Image (cartoon, rainbow, N blue to C red; front, side, top):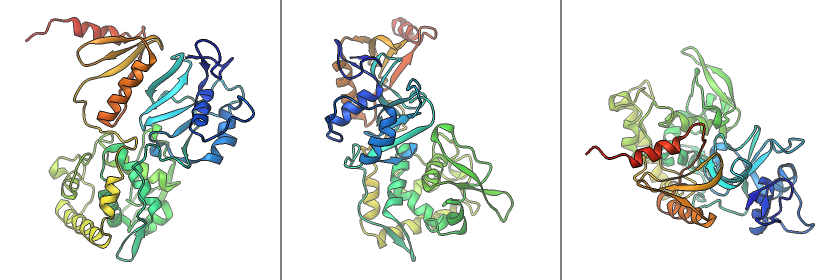
Length: 383
């Protein structure tokens, strides 16, 4: 198929779509909307009329397979609006002018003009085995709701963090939001100024309550903003702690302190005292809520989640200048794909085996990385 705004409903040879027609057609095929009234709709009607009836809005950090984005959807002329569907938190599939067809690209930088809106279909699981349904968790007279547990799960999966560890830690820090700072600033872990988050996370925050020791806490507009910030703070992307991928509460705690390789100490009481507190809290919560921590961690998979570990095999798809052939690099050789189904089967196989999307690069002839790759492959090995 090809991209066209003039006749975007699958007519022509090859069939022609634009971004909204492709998404609307997918929603029709899935039974979320009907075909009555013929071909109709655009990004504006999706945002204002269609999605509120069949989906709920979510934050950028929650996005996973099957979720829908709408960029600048009410732009008067439509030229600066865009829409598509997430394959995982970092990858989208969308009908776009640059590729001239439906293509898979990174999400960040390819979704279009701000503002961005994100939607999750009401009667779908978005790839889901990722929903926790066992109710709240309680400890020492406090509780964390099922809804907030799900938020922790959603944001943890972006950084390969076990959500049960974060739930135990957030109890220590604020009794799950029941401290003054937790209530007033929606800041459950005491994140303080100065704090800067990457713009692509879309975190809405301002100056919060004054700290007794000087300075200020950060005030978050919503708990989604807080959970997005909190998991970023813990991530390798932030670069302070070594907790991504840890599988025991003891190893998670080690990764929070300089004595075990972190670049900062998470708490001023020091590693040993914090370890005693965190491990005992985790074990107490686990004993008081049988099976729930295990269920929380088991919900954190196959849900648009991705591993931050390096590739075992270096494989990717790429296209030059958004046109002509798509190429597949299998780690040793480059092959041109001659049919869209070839790309799809490679993407499906890779996702099934790796739990994340096969990387797709949009290179340009003005910055010819494809020639650099070709040069490496043709070069005689040194030993």
